[in-house]
Image 1 (cartoon, one colour):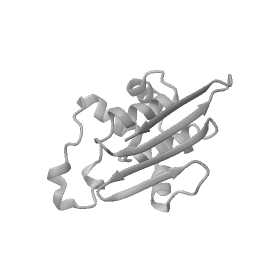
Image 2: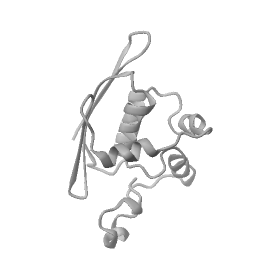
Image 3: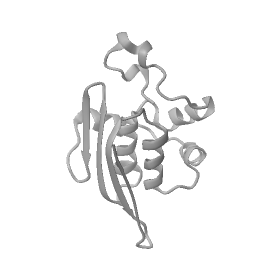
Image 4: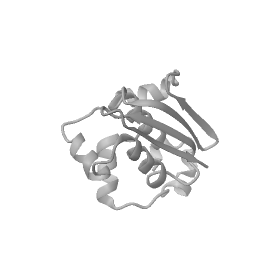
Length: 145
């Protein structure tokens, strides 16, 4: 799910316009939640804004259009990505759409769903996240391409 507006080479938009096929209502719910953030940015949005104190580990590497994106929890992120995730507004329907798309999954499993179901093939090169729930339970997800 990369919107045409986010492609760096607009002339090749026709080649990449359809990256994943999803039901229209799910597609609309995704945009209601995350506007036009990329899957990489959505993962960072979850880690840094939605559940900032739950993540005890976060390492992500993504590649798209000959660009590499790298995140490590506790390290500074680039300004463009930071602006994109900070500019996203959480509206009154946010929780409803989140539940609609991801049911009652925890944050790790939501990230797993984004990596495995909502992203172009080979987009995420490496993802490792770990959360500590209030009851001290540890939940982890790891993806290696």
